[in-house]
Length: 351
Ligand SMILES: *Cc1c(COP(=O)(O)O)cnc(C)c1O
Image (tube, protein in one colour):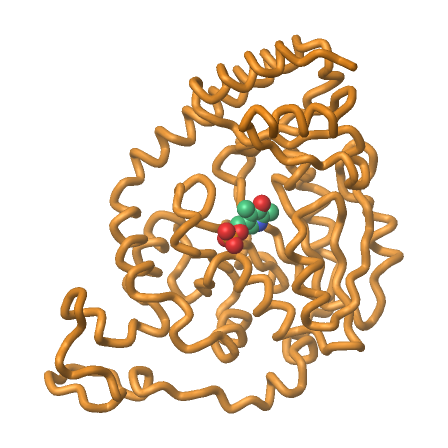
């Protein structure tokens, strides 16, 4: 394979002189900071919040590095995966010229950010078994294809993509392969973060929003080569991860054991939920899941969805999504929430 990162980056990004913030121009020790027009008198909260946060979040990255076994230099932190996706598209896809590939049914934000950036989004649907259609992906690639988004475990289907299929894409595509591992902690599969050295075209995306239980903090990670990370650093907003998020995430990372307990509980309850769901008369099938949700195919999916909504139980109606006809996506809840859901579903009367 002939991978040339320099050729992939948009010309204007390659030529860009990035904004140089006051805090990034100075490094060392000092005790009088009069360089950033902060409020020298403090803040109504605590004394730290008057200062701009670390633009590159080194303390936080080092802590993540120790847990993930990936050097801090190989990380870009984003304001949620949302920002991680947007930065990739803006770095590599020239509007109205380049294109990216997604494999629906999949996470909606890749397409939305493609559209926002006026970049063509090529859809290569998954095969009926929800695996990658390698021949169709190959056929969709042209010289302007810069990114392929692979979500594994996939939202909303819940399954993981075959590792060999992903490797074939990584080995043959001369653009960048983004593997979205938002749900990896609920899966038995190995993360691709261990393969960063192997594949110069690999970006692995993870998030604090799911297994870490910190959706409100807005913190996502792109793991990638030094070269890709420095391109993304060049274009990110200087202070994209706020101080409160950095502090709270640092604190959360001290509680790895609690997080692992939540992951085990979630996986256990997922299997309980599947067992119960398949016994319901309206449920045709529950797809195997490596995530913290299940996709259930059922009779009258939209009616069931509306019925649950009336009863104050909200699930995700995916019945108008390709390959997910008649399907509801149900997030794994607590045993108490499952009891309520199942009791309500048992009382459903077909009309
Ligand atoms: C939930 C989810 C995310 C997380 O997005 P954030 O912006 O980090 O909250 C990313 N990818 C997929 C596929 C998801 O389902």
